[in-house]
Amino acid sequence: MGNAKSSAMSKEILEDLKLSTKFTETELTQWYENFKKQCPSGRITPEEFESIYARFFPDSDTKTYAHHVFRSFDTNDDGTLDFKEYIIALHMTSSGKMSLKLEWAFSLFDLDKNGYITKSEVAEICQALFKLIPVDEQSKLPEDENTPEKRANKLWAYFNKGDNEKLAEGEFIQGVLDNENALRLIQYQPLEK
Image (cartoon, rainbow, N blue to C red; front, top):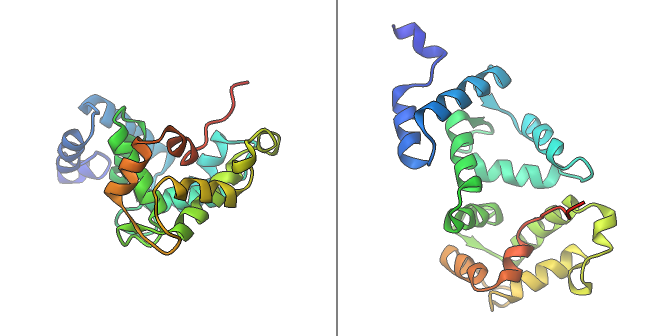
């Protein structure tokens, strides 16, 4: 029985994921089988992740943003995503709970993982987000959001922080919850065609 575990998900990981996500044992088992087919090594590399991400945004430059998303998902900092990190990421980003999505968004903006966000970190993520917006959509943006710098400045202003101040996770989450425009600025939703 010991060797059979190599191709199956461990009971420990399965139980942990059932407790920490909304997914059922059946869903997790099916996803694990698909994950192993797509990633026989059991890990997703940054390059594979970028390739997957590019399929969702075919008209955009996804490389920089995908890099930051990957970093935020790679919780053990080993340079790859294992199945557990992949499922936790899926849960955090697809769950209906806004608080989970905003916790993840905070980790995306917290580039150095020190528990705070700076204006320069906001600027870097806004730059990456802006690259997701196709050029024809960029021209339709409001005047105060039509460059990455303007978007970063507008977003930072919602938090009432000086240029050299830091933003804690709770402040970030509350600031976004308190302002619909801040929520819109931390993500990219393609225009309906």
